[in-house]
Length: 88
Image (cartoon, rainbow, N blue to C red):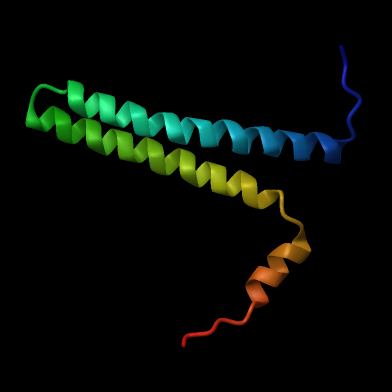
C-alpha cells in the first residue's frame, strides 16, 4: 500500500507521530525511572538511576513539546508572542 501524500501532508503527519510517540516514551520513562530506582541496590546506584531516569523524562518531554509546537501555524505563534501579560 502506498500513500500519496504531499510534502506538507507528510511533514504534518510525521510531526504528529513524533509528538505522540515521544509523549508515550516520556510516560514510559516515568515508570522505568521508578523501577530502576527500586531495583538499585546501593545508594550510589539509586542516585545514578534517578539522574538517568530524570534525563529521559526531560528529553522526551522536551521533544514532545518541540514536535507539538511545530504543528501550530505561524499565526498562532505570533498570537502567543504578542499576547498581553497581566502582572496583577
